[in-house]
Length: 206
Ligand code: FES
Image (cartoon, rainbow, N blue to C red; front, side, top):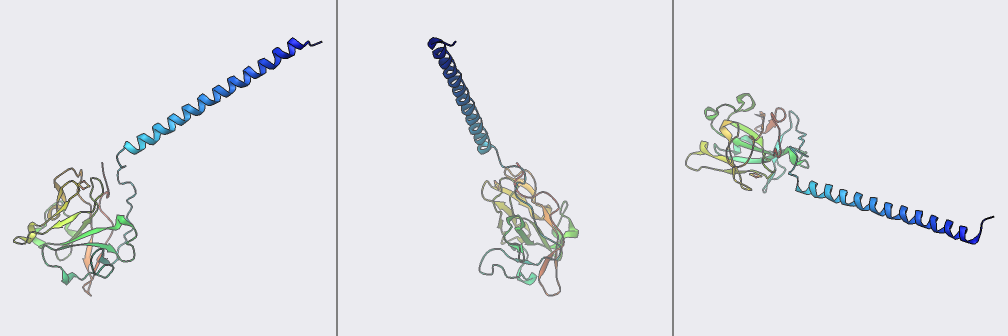
């Protein structure tokens, strides 16, 4: 027969087990919470992954259109650019993908040197990704009025400089690699079209 004292002890034991389970559960939840916070912090502190999110959808034959200015969305004409000029362009109908942003440049044909892929140029037109390979800012064009072929591309976020007549090699600043070239050709109707996709990685590479 179970007396009253035994019953009391039994109840107290069960309460002790329940309390221990509760404390253990609380500790596990706290550890998991701290681990989650640490992961979140590491994610924030980490630099952007190489090329993360930058996947171009440009196809051969896509026509180039203005990406900025009053003519945005309109087809660009080859005859509208003089030597030393450049425009930011998109493939027609594909402007919603920022990875498709390209800088179209007009230089003297005789000015191109390696590693520019001459086969991917036409009538002095050459094109490169407009997304800086450092941290992904859009690059700008710096025109040299007195010597148009000496014009160059610069990213004003951290002052990386690229040489468009030499495959957009990095000539200054923190950008780790050149801006990738992409083939262009002049069509019979004076519009321009892409002839393929980028020859190298695009987007941030650090
Ligand atoms: S993002 Fe272009 S130089 Fe830093």
